[in-house]
Image (cartoon, rainbow, N blue to C red; front, side):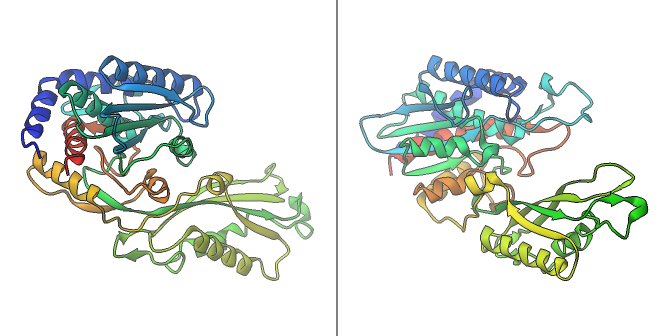
Length: 397
């Protein structure tokens, strides 16, 4: 192993920190909101140009969202079959109205860069892109290719990542650059988005004896879903994993009418030691129990996006990529990284299901989204170093 590579990477990043941070600021200022195809396409083009201008072989590929392509970048020795994949997304959630400044101005305050998606996950995605340009400048890596895959449609269940894999993209291992507080996340919660649809009988308020209110049954259903007994284990070796968010209630026509229809949308985050199928069946059992002997009908169905692109959990990954990345982190941080189960849902399980052992590691908070969101610039710069070092050393093992 060439012991000087970490010093060369660190010196390069430190001497180019202003430019690397300026590009992150440019990316965060892009209004690449989830579903805004025009803005997502513009940002894909900007990323594509930056990579090609800095020695990374980049191309635009189908992401499953026409007009908003994936960007696929490669650096290193293409004559071998060895590849290490870095994956991230550049679609972001819309900011709330509570920001005290223009969210898209992306100000730097102290050592923090603020803006929508600065943590989730433009910080990590930009860090992996900049790591590839750092290696290009240093003539690295040797013996294989570092591949970077920024996608525009992660919130569709990793659609862009799945499309790239369907098109033949392969690698020995992968790192998904979602925010982890620079912890190494080698386990993963799963997600089930489900709609509980209740059908009652409409009537005027004054004819209550005829009507069957479709909203009222959600009260005992919510109570059962929020009870400790639902979706066990709520706590296991990975920590406190279960979350039940009563995300959306839609029902009713007018204030003077008994509602005949209601849809309750629930977001369940469950432990790596259970499955979406088990959680769905438990939800259906709860609804059957509440409906028994009543005059309304109810059904539970997973949302279409979870059927098309399941958000699977991921048991603890033990693989050399975890150790290699941990060693790179320790080299620059001076201490070993913490290990954790990721609380949100990166594309990491998708890669593992397709035979690419992968973990999650990136700058910014695991909790992803909040008013006046920010990514710490020192974490961003450290992530660039860690990604570049991991790729440079990977092919020397």
